Amino acid sequence: MAGREYLLAELPRIVNFPYRLHALGWRPDHLFIHRNTRLMHLFICVTFRKTGESCIIVNGRKRRGSSAPSLSVIRAGTRMETIHASRHDELYFTYDEPAASAVLALGINSGEFRMTPAVEEVLSAIRRNLDVLPLRGAADRLDQLAIRLITECCTASGGEPSEDERIAEISAGFALHFADRIDLGRIAAKYGMSRRSFFRAWKRHFDETPLQYLIARRLAFAEELLAESECDLGEIALRSGFGTPGYLIERFRARHGCSPLEFRRRVRVGGFAGPELSSLE
Image (cartoon, rainbow, N blue to C red):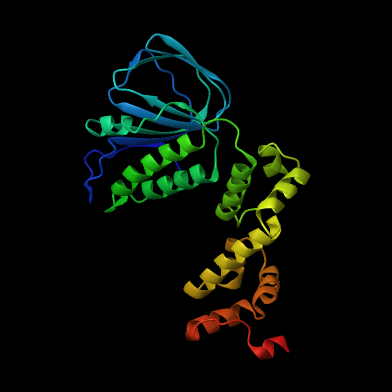
């Protein structure tokens, strides 16, 4: 998705949401140099995928930024001067009054955060709604998604997560990215665990293994596609993460005692109540 700014101030809204956006900008692989820039609106910026550290003077005070994802809350009237910039992805929101005061009243602060599955999910939802502007309701959803993203960034700040939080974030990531190729070693390392310590921690929270957890979610999505779409088995296998129709059929028979196409037929005839006796003989 190419970078650009979206002016939302003049777009009609359906509901009177108090945190109405003035504008929203998406800047992938962004490098911007401030030269005594004065901000005219409340500016809230989410930056991630940074290539290095940065340094900027804000109202005469030097501020350094690390390579970690960060949320910046910058009031209208602030002056900024760049000393050193680094490339990054950036999503920003601007607010006019009275929305700006309403947003500041939420008590949000600048700071670093972890890129959690919840943050990723809201970012994806924002990009989807940008694709359908100016359709009815899209601006309303973006108003609400902006506040939700700010909330998730604040929730994901505040130091290292506990074991419970790490396993919850990992399982949420599995649920969000179940169709992707999952590297458990890489994920464990991201959360400061070895493969062995990850499996021990997972076992304390779930009765099923990580693979069983993933397969269950892939099957649930495949069942949804079989029931509600006309996709063929090849497309369903790819979209659900099984890769090939053969592996989808194998897992489907192990779970339901019938083929995917037989499952589709039974669901559409009148509901699926488990395998027929003939399929178990």
